[in-house]
Length: 316
Length: 80
Image (cartoon, chains in turn brown, yellow):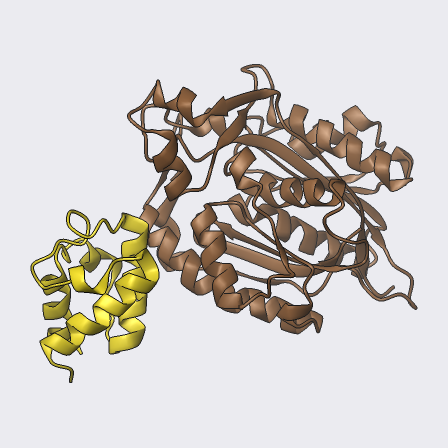
């Protein structure tokens, strides 16, 4: 067995749109400031009784429906999340139960905003090791539960949602569709993003995180390209964690990507959805047919921890 | 070692590139945020570019002490 590929994608966003103007009625902020600093126009916020698992299930159902596989074919479910209040049963088991997947390996992964790329890499490794054949990989977050709605520095940033991918083994004669992962963390800076304590809220040192993200991530993304044997100029799309529009622009500038590369900017309409942001943005790009099937796409997750993971995949 | 004037000129070029500040507006007495309208994230980009250009390290906890262009010039002179 020579590797794996993404077979299909799906996403889900709550129906409630919260605009910058609506937030300006709650905290001292305004639409122009938010657009300029983080590049967000609006975000989706889940209903009070809507859970991380509900959103993960909705996205996973769509990905499975698009895969041509049956629930019985899935033997691994991995959910990346840092915001689920439901610890046990974990979110992956809830997804499996809802979709009628009988006895899959089921686990949640928490590396905060880089979670989807970690989960995708672990799934690829499990397939390469022969431990699984068809997997569901989901990123799902309800960050509104962890948001201090009186803190104007953070409450403008976050949103809720989910994205999912079906990942399958490729034959020995087929090129792998998920490239080698470049992953790691910066434990010396771990406290620059925090979700700690009882009734936790997200807190961050914005400038320190911005500096790390705009300087450390581009060389790692280049490594991911190199390991996949793809030049940055050959990339069809760059899907970074949707943390801040100016971080995405800063990384893209350092990568020297040509104008032909589609740069995902789902943050404008979805805000920062942590582990959900990459599969959400990717699924929407593919749905809008902005990236041709088979084209190389660079994924780069980074965030709380400060963890990171990135890889080049072939677009489903 | 660059002179203070050379460092101001270098910072003015960085400020123009990062934040669209007119080079003629940049002088030692000017505050980055108040006078030159450089926001907190652009200030990080200015610091990173200044580190590369002048061969200094400007740690995160020092950035908040650099209120004026002159503060930055003095820091670069003292640490390069």
